[in-house]
Length: 188
Image (cartoon, rainbow, N blue to C red; front, side, top):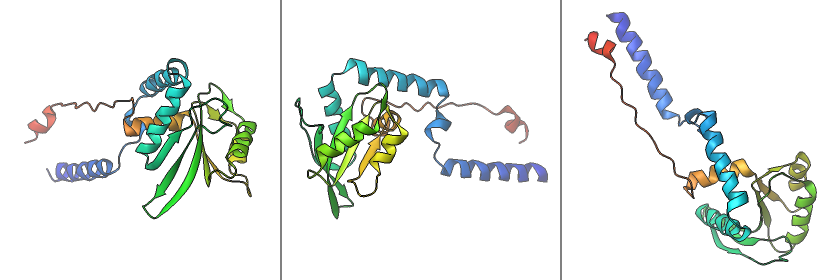
């Protein structure tokens, strides 16, 4: 009986430790589940909604993330700037941010980042480049190049995670699973 109590205490401590650490998306979703909703989201973002709807989605996402005065330029020939807003930091500091939204099915190159930086110079403190695709290694280096205005990059996976986090078009259901431990009852 003493051994059973010790094992039970160890299990209780282990379950409390596990409960205090929230599971990551990879721990709670099977690879098929993750791939399934991400693939569907990617298809919707790149094939179903139009570019102006995508820009409005990003506008909403930025507002949900704490940006204020977020505007979408919404016009052709916008010079590579799709919108602007103000990022507020803890209510004390703020940064003027311009953003570009790319519904892209491939890899965003360093030249895209350079073009965006050229368009944003003199208009904002920071740039934000959001894509459904991915960024090349050179694009990532270009975005953080010393002496140039900084540009934050958000790729398709990060975008999907943020949409999921804020519940924008993505619903997460928690399913309760109840089982009876017959062996536990037999030990009473």
